[in-house]
Length: 276
Figure: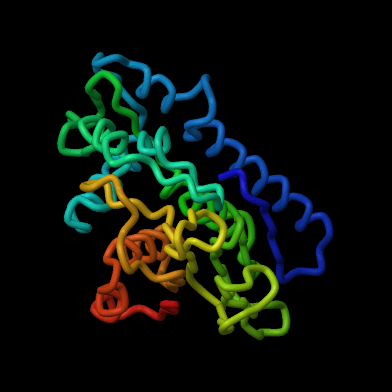
């Protein structure tokens, strides 16, 4: 959620543009402060340090937890917001530092949404467990920003938070926004496709920036929470277009978690996608 923010607006009004940009920045900052696991002053910190004590949450947080639970169920337990604790042994810094199997196994008892007691609006974690909304937080921020902009003005806009996007309408000349699909082999320098986006969300999951490489084997940062290990034969990158950015992000991540079956999974969802 700390990724660069860019808002492109189909308007000549400088005052409206400034107002919308301030509105967008304020909303993105609010969501980051509320849901980032890196902070010590928000509800996520309170939940993760509750030591088994039940924690009541507000409606917005409850809605995200409900969504995360739906993702867990739809993905056959592979989309799991409790799996963030695996970062204690996995450091995807481009090195060859693969953790020992015993170290990975030692973390698994603390992973599993099925171990969480979630009875809206109260969540209870076992001591040592954590939740991490990073897998849906940025996409949620994009959609929330889009909602606020639309309420303020019906002008077309393209919202881009670090590559997760939503188009509220076309450019001022009526043309769609042109969006490049990044090449994971030369990220930031080459494109493998282009999207004309007038309405809807777009999100990408992949290993271009976060991976390990040892003995010619590339280990993606997309971990299977049921094993604690990177998903075998996962695509290098998946880009999905959907009705919302949150939906696009959910589908792109779920596709990565399918490994070699990613493309057939996406075809079954009947969405536009790139699977590399």
